[in-house]
Amino acid sequence: RRWASSSSTSEPVVAVIPRAAVSVVARCECAKDDVRYALVQRGKEPNKGIWSFAGGKIESGESSMIAARRELWEETRLGSPPDDDGTAESVDATILWHTEGPVTSSDSIHVDDGIVRWHYVISQYFATIEPVQSAVKNKLEPPTLIPEDDADDAKFFSLADIEEGIDKGRITPGLLRVIRRVEAMYAAGLLDCK
Image (cartoon, rainbow, N blue to C red):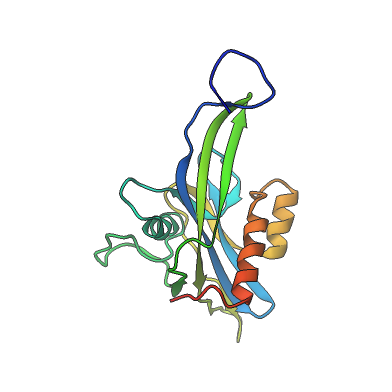
């Protein structure tokens, strides 16, 4: 790889150092055939306006697990902030975390005019969200999310909605690969959540 210079090549010029980041695959199973995933619509670059998992940069001295919990709360109000004194606004939902570390990882590299503008190495964490009783008799639904911080919106999507959103360029394409990997691990009993 090359660092930023004036010579021309088809290979992107590297202008940034990769940053550590986290995202959360938050899964809500309302029924056996109704599984949904919490996504946020990004409020700033990179990918402003695109839907993706809740997530963001790891702060200095912060463990990746704490960063995942913080980012999920900051962007959806699921869970609670790390320093919660009981007064923070949160969505009323039960969250169970896979606490043995990230379930997978990926790169998010954004090239503009042949220059790498952003490069994140993302550790994906997994959590299950308990559904809540809906207004419709005997039906469960995901809790309503509250978009905050740098999320313009936050809601749950079915796998079919995610596939359609990817096809239309509204959802991060790499999500499907991560979800399929996580679902295979979940089905095999490898993602114990507490």
